[in-house]
Amino acid sequence: MIPFFRKNSWNMTTDFRKIVLYLDSTNVHDRRIIAGIVDYSRKLRPCWNIRVLCKEGESEYYSMLDPLQQIINLKNWIPDGMIICCRNQEVVKVLRRVSCPIIAVEEKSFQMRLPSAISSFSTDNVEIGSFVAKKMMDQGFTRLAFCGVPETPLTLWSRLREQGFTATITRAGGSISVFEQEKFASSKKTLKDLQKWIVSLVKPVALFASYDVRAAHVLYACHDLGINVPDEIAIIGCGNDQTLCELCIPSLSSVDQNGYEIGRQAASALNRMMSGQHVDVTKKVVPHAGVITRKSDDTWQINDEDVLAALRYIRDRACQGIHVHDVVNEVNLSRSSIENKFRNSIGHSLHAEIKKKQIATVTHLLVTTDMTLKQIAEQSGFPHVQHMIKLFRHFTGKTPAQFRAKTA
Image 1: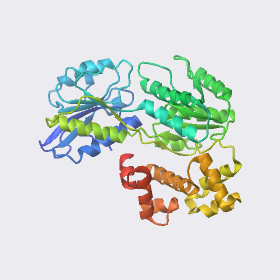
Image 2 (image 1 turned 90 degrees about the vertical axis):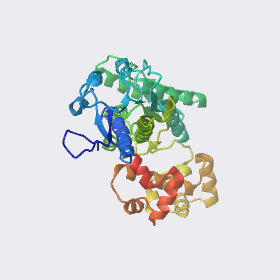
Image 3 (image 1 turned 30 degrees about the vertical axis):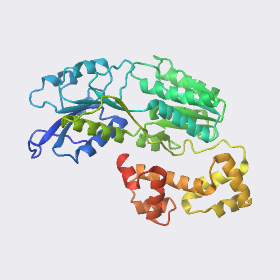
Image 4 (image 1 turned 120 degrees about the vertical axis):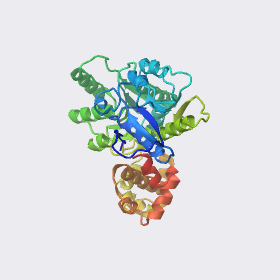
């Protein structure tokens, strides 16, 4: 929850710092950044009195301050620090007139030129594109596609994801198709063009959409065209909007941009600045948190039918407590034969694939439900909670509790 402070609404002491967040509180990624900031600030003394300021869309309704252009004229609520998302040069002009410490997150614009004294934290959008391309090629796809948004001054993020995606595929010798949308086309024409492009793709193909809404557009178009997802087109989005991803049929796999960690690091830097400590003025890139795998890309492009049979069996039964001998019995080969085939095609053992699928289920339940760890262990096929925690930490570097807190 975002703390909304109103005059005399509670017994606020004078021992606090006034912090302005210029972020879009209705945007999923910005809300995760805010969550990271708030969680970090709760541990501080003096505490932070946080107010959210935004002049975009529905966020204006929730704004508690005057427009940003007037913030320097506020007399009763002068901020001690600010964390802002830079979307245009008008914001930067105002920032040059504000004397308090400022941290920037996620520059959105091609034209953005931050003042030299402002440090920034952001997602590595090029790496996101590259990571998704590698994941899709690891699943056996040689034909890949990208669906972004038209290039405008505020779509830097989409273009960078496209660059990382296409460059990685080109270096690997894969085939890539990019949807080129007209900038000012009507929604009706855009849908028609999108459907025409989807039909033209040589299938099976793996498709990366630059954000979740775009991925949903592709998914709906596939429904209308009678194209199977994921068997004909495997889809991954970006942003991990949990409500939207779970609403889609099949549920949408998506990259977690790690907004929580961006917010936490930005808050830490701002706190050091307000305490008089030195903070390096650089652009700091925060790693993404990987793909939250759901159903929309749960497929493989492998020619060996025995390996595919093993993969399908593991996909369907991994969370039922199966073991390697169960897979061996399913494919009706000797253990050594299927293990060798599997390693040659997938790159790891049957046992590793079972555990990988279990951990993917644990990750999904941590992010999308309020289940207890005991319930999650039961749902993902672990006989003991401690075994699940140990394996999850091995795969992710975090305990399930730590992972859930950072993706809340």
